[in-house]
Amino acid sequence: MSLGRKYHTTIKYWRLLLKPKTLLASHHSAFTLIEVIISVVIISVVILAVMEISSRTHNSAVYLSKRNIISFQDSYFLNDKINQYHKDTKNAYDMLSPVFMISEQKSKKILQNISRDITIPDPIIAPTFGDAGPNANIEKVILKDQYASTYFRFNLSSF
Image 1: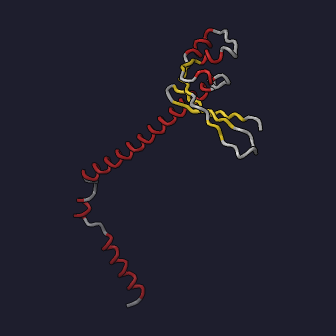
Image 2: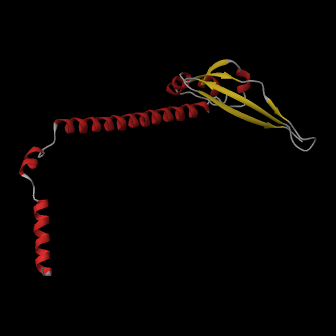
Image 3: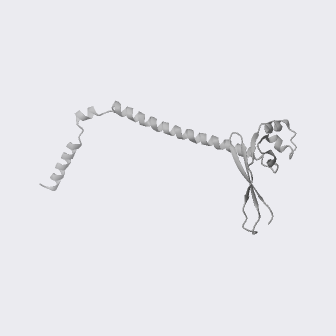
């Protein structure tokens, strides 16, 4: 048998193997109902997971935005006279009016609507190492509204 004839026989053999069978082709020409249902379920689960992640991301962004606004508003209350208001509720206008002259009615109204519960625990006195350094007082200030915020004030006394 020559090489050309052997090659030709091999090609015929492979064509027969790869030729579509009419019985199987008509039986498996489209997706079955089970395959469609399973693919719809898989796609639905994936879409629900993506929506849940998107919702969490949106909620986190809203939370961070609110915390940022409240943190900015907390600066109205953090002045040198805050120690006088332990366990008291104050609005921003009461805290700022001794320092700033606020004459505009709209600004007064906005500042009066911003209030915080002020709590100042006993100060922490940082230990010194002999006579080698200054004494440090650490005051904790807790401002409560929708969210609680904690701030620390550090006072250094002379050597």
